[in-house]
Length: 362
Image (cartoon, rainbow, N blue to C red; front, side):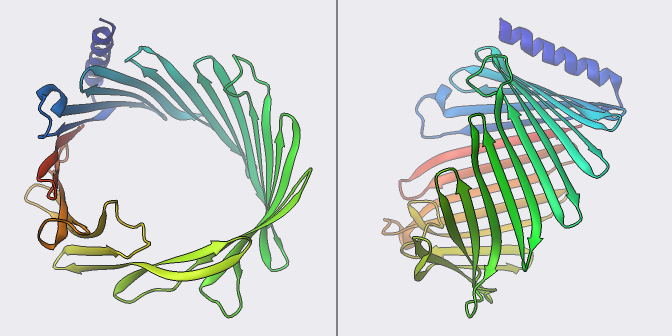
């Protein structure tokens, strides 16, 4: 009964806003996913519906987002949002409800203002019975940048605002490098201060750079080096590298873990990617994928599609074809877009998924 009342309220609100006319906009996005392998008709179909209504008046926009999901049962999420300007202040408020329980989820309010080149921001979050407040201040003075972050309250407290943590961040040039300094304070006192430098060039190794972090705490001092690799632009084919690293800092073997190719032929883009032993580029258990895709204008509006073929090493089918995926989208008019996708597991001879959807905008 509560769900029906909530739906009627959302519907009546939407109808009332339609009567206003010129300041109303929104979308209705529906996706229907079908699993042809599921013997139960009720479990084989998933329907997701998202109705978004935006009402704009002056500098403010008020939004309602209603999400319905139909599977074994029906459950709904409802979100209300308000965003706009109040003098020099920018305000955004987001209120979430989980209607499947039903219960209040969270309320988040963000407030920001810029005065004399200094940015101030505050974030208030009410989650169930926990209240948190975060204050952010940032600015630039010549070559020096500063950022302050203070937080009050945490998930273990009930409707109060104890000091949780604070941080101060500075950015400034020093000699030939740009340095970032970070001070972190917890509710139990000082935690650490760190100094970071990035993009340190290594002589005779133009493809290697280093990031360095020097950190001081109450009990120890540490220096961490992190490598970055750029092997330059590769003509025609793309090569994917993997470099073994250990300790602080030892470089090991440099391996090529994949090779790729991308080109455009007559408005159609072809992309191929092959994964070599040791790589992690293609979703398991496949090791190679070929994709053709395009975006063009059809008779009614923009049209796009992509078709991908995945190859399974040691598969039972011709050329080890293991998976076939396709998707398309066409904009019938400025207010209506249709989309469809399907997935076929060739290796196991399963038609695994079929998705049909549309988006209505006004």
